[in-house]
Amino acid sequence: MTIRQTLRTDGPVLLPGDQGYDDHRKPLNPALDPRPAVVVRAAGTADVRRAVLAARRHALPFAVQATGHGTHVAHDDALLLRTGAMASVLVDPDRRVARVGPGARWGDVLAAAAPFGLAALSGSSPDVGVVGYTLGGGLGWLARSYGLAAESVLRAQVVTADGELTTASADRNPDLFWALRGGGGSFGVVTALEFRLYPVAQVYAGAVTFGRKRAAETIAFYRQWIERVPDALSTALLLTRDGSLVIKTLYAGDPERGRALLTPLWKVAGAVAADTMRVVDYAQAAMGGTFARTFDQVRTLDDDLVAALVAEADATVEIRHWGGRISRDDGAAAHRDAPLSIILDTIPSPRTTEALSRCGRGSSFLNFLSDPTRTASAFTARNWAALRRIKATYDPKNIFGAGLAVPPAATSASAQAHPAAG
Image (cartoon, rainbow, N blue to C red; front, side):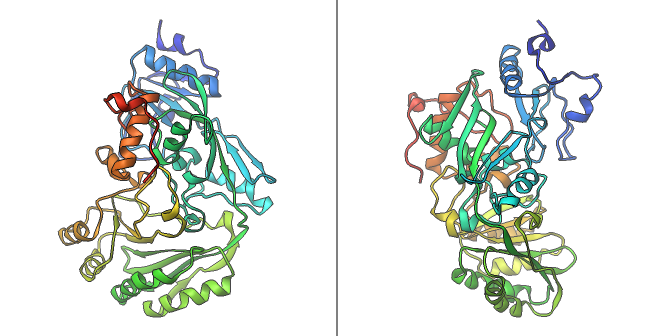
């Protein structure tokens, strides 16, 4: 039986040479030119189940793509499942909960929640897919106030490696539930996700741009200043290729209080070249992000690392403040006690590399990772071991092994539930 005959899906099945195949095989990353064996455009959960079973029957690698933001490897000769058509968004304002399909984007959720004065823990772009972002942890501008997006998940419907539809929640398959909230897409295909919304209607947000002359002094001040700011204030410092220092901010509180908190930092930075700070609906507060060619979490910003970053004239550098609620949660994602992260959109200079090796932790975050060989660096050693055991329980043959995947453990301990996170 051919792959097309096996599938019999409600959504289109596209083979090489079919009309539409080239339109749906590529992710957003222009460096990738994948040639999957078949592309399945799922119309619903039944199509997802059929796709998983067909991949197993025909021994095809399996990959999932909603928007394509998180695709970092070319899925050649694979069954590529496209979930973009499954984009439902339902908001329950009384419970402050949203339920979305695997193709939903953050812009859809923000638009649905805004009329009720509610906000989701979205990312920096409204075009990013909700499910992939959330499974990878989800570091948004409200994370210091409410935690990573993964921590707000209440329930997930998941098609597992055996093609069965199951529910993961705090009281049903709790080990799978823990793994999904930050462990990525290695454990099944999520066909519905429920998560909390928060009473944030408006925020004080934007960016203030300065020249780069006082960048070193500003960063040196910043590393002390962040120790005193409230969780409601999120900031990032950018050194841009055009020679600017940009301070990006979102404050979920009174704008006058926010401006008072920020004024000492702005004064150190010098003369203002541009100021877009304003009170805005949260749904309109997306401020973009920096492409993470290099990412590390750092314990401290010593003077030499500051000088090295300022000297990176041919790169965009982002220094972002973590902490707050992020460090107090206990899910699978991330090294939560890191106070800061450093992103460069290129390979750093030897001086910066050396400084990062001294001040950094060598750790990453799944949403910012592009190298599958470094997936383990996105987790603590304890959580990585727990994720591998859970993977062996739900996907021992590694059907969901594409991209930033967690490999199954190969020991008899694989059937054990995960320990408390740490």
